[in-house]
Image (cartoon, rainbow, N blue to C red):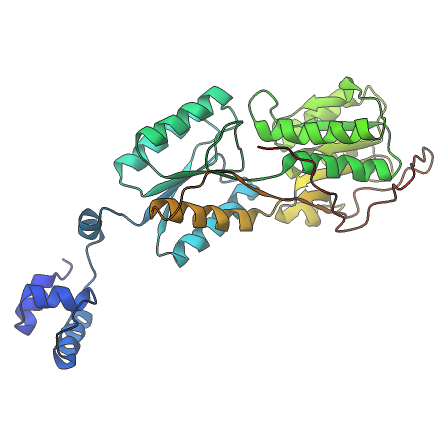
Length: 363
């Protein structure tokens, strides 16, 4: 049995009130000698406060829920790490809820976290969530009076959110390939029908094509699933057409693309240039280090916690989304097409670390 304040009172001979004031740092009128005796006794008896009792008194559990679509995904794992670090700095604990990309589980976890007295929720919605489903989840959190911040997969709605400017990200990827001379560009998207971030990456990609007056070939745009399997399946569809470059809308898809291209006897980047998205840890460890669009995942997680803490403490309202700028990271998976050189005035070859001005509108 853990030691209680009453046990310390019996051991020292002081009142429960005196013990409580000392242990809670409010013993302003109590002598240093008495405080030392009480604190020494508490240490010897291995006293630890009952956090459940504390939360009932303060109406705060010092826990937040993190609802993640797939913790096995390196992107979400990196984000969770940043969130955990930030929570520890604030003295909070994270309850991790993995949904396996299921909206139904999203709802179950929101209700569970409310029942367990979580102080707030960081919510990354499942990829099977439609706009209507996402709004329903937001309405549920608001009905439960649960402070929340939506991470990464923002909806076309005004609610507290942290994300990357995905339209600029797609534009960065396509512009880099175009500057290298590619005109036959394929794109492996994420789930277009549900996730707004997939739509935005594609929108940026298409914007670059239009700006460079390159015809959009719909047969070269394949809907994927943000998985290696989806990337490989897209290559199977694309092999009947001519293309010199592929933009895969996340690094997991890009890995599947590169692996399947090799099975078809195609070399990266000699035969096909490939650009990914996210810049997860293994991107630079692939057989051919991957050119990709970096999301500032760790910083996004830290900022999400900071914003959620402000909402929990009612220090401020979060009236708009915070959008982080992406960055193009050039590695070995892209190369110039000398046989199909293509240039326009003022458009030079992209260099490592290049940034293109934001093209986003309001999210």
